[in-house]
Image 1 (cartoon, rainbow, N blue to C red):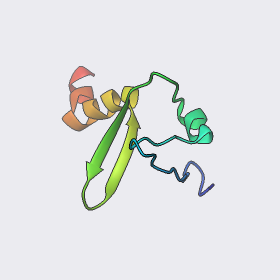
Image 2 (image 1 turned 90 degrees about the vertical axis):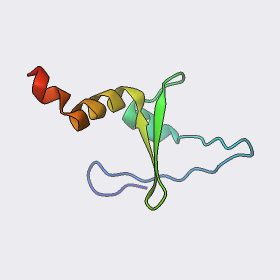
Image 3 (image 1 turned 120 degrees about the horizontal axis):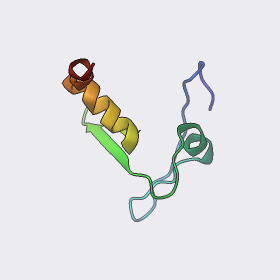
Length: 71
């Protein structure tokens, strides 16, 4: 499903082993390839977010304010 510019939504079914398949369009847009590490962030009230591992390091640095100290 296509939403506003840069915003997307997809659905995925959970298999018997608890696995999901990330839709091809989503993998292409976010550069997700076999072997990549994904981080799942969970909030019991808001749900689950999936972040590509390389983006997590960037986000983690921002949250801890490490980028400001490195500049």
